[in-house]
Image 1 (cartoon, rainbow, N blue to C red):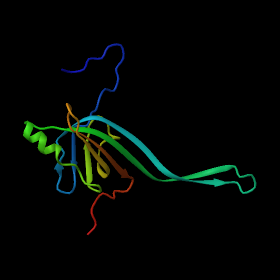
Image 2: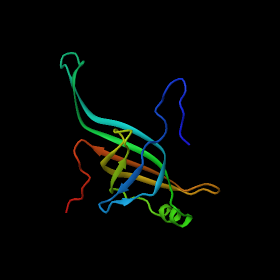
Image 3: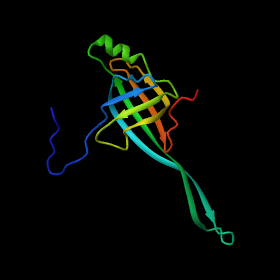
Image 4: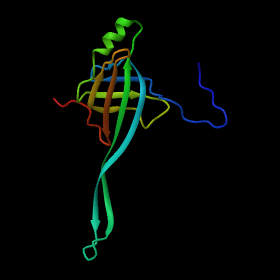
Length: 142
């Protein structure tokens, strides 16, 4: 069922529709539960030598980090269990498909961390942190 908005419209829910990783374009069969974006950069501040006051800044090495929480899924229980047994490796190239949120979407992320949680009476969940920089460093060098 679709979401109806009344009174005011809001950006609603997780809009990512696909996740792939590594050079083999392995599809992560998972449903997004949450996603968050953090932008950061390194900074060097310039000081007035007489007063010590900050007079300027150099901002460089901008990057975007996305934290994803997903649960593995599939067309059958067996397929979901197979998907739940495989997590991306640290350093894998990772892509997020998202036509609504262009800041989250991207094909040049690198997997920074992954955790898997299994609970009694609940589904398996993955927490995946991915990061990309202004320059694409996601390709393997041979």
